[in-house]
Image (cartoon, rainbow, N blue to C red):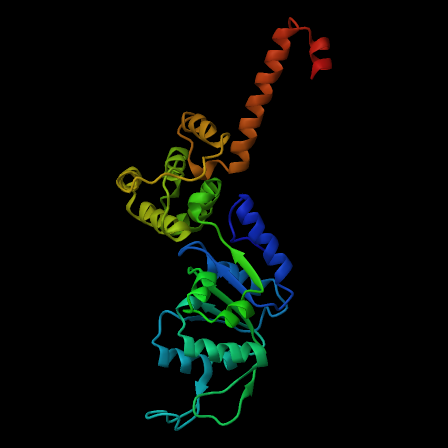
Length: 317
């Protein structure tokens, strides 16, 4: 069940393999990677492939709340815990009982809160603010960060014991610039998703896809998704891609991985065939056309070599 994890690169295939291996283990997981690569999506797929599917999946962004609010959000509080606490608040560890608690941007959590999180991971219990007794919880914790937690632990900005407790399984998601072969597949996925809403998908051509594959995508898949939305709503595809190319030139960046050799020339060939658009050709068709073309060239070369003697040519082939 990996329909939304789009790509054929080795890096993405490895992510899928890890999801399959880890989803039934209940082991703590840290998902790492740059902003926009899809860490929450991987967390959701871990959940969907686990026995906890159907139980709560609760996300908490550790960077979005001040320390005091994050503490009450995670652990809850009892009436009278502080001024204004008139009624009980259930924390996310209680709400997520039996399911998954996804702690996004865990590298931004303060050291005091890290200590409390470590206690929960070690004991399976937490103490709401103002309470006198711990509460048991059965939660699978999946964390995500764009920070280097190992370096943060060595610099004492992240607890080393918590790092080792969380980092039993590490899933790294490569930036999009390192797996440009996934870009055409992602474009097609988003075009199929948004074309019924914006009615402009048919104008995204293979030439557009090839040009998009040359951009470095510092915002990764999220940036690609947003650019495609803008293109399909406004319709000025070439102008938007021109802006991306100008941005790339000004930053003196270039893709770290080449566009697959079979893809670029075949896209050019398709572009010249009656202006075929992306919705008319799946990548399987594109690849098949490339293979068929190579086969034709090989057969033609063998026939030329044998003087068009089909019997001798068939023996060579």
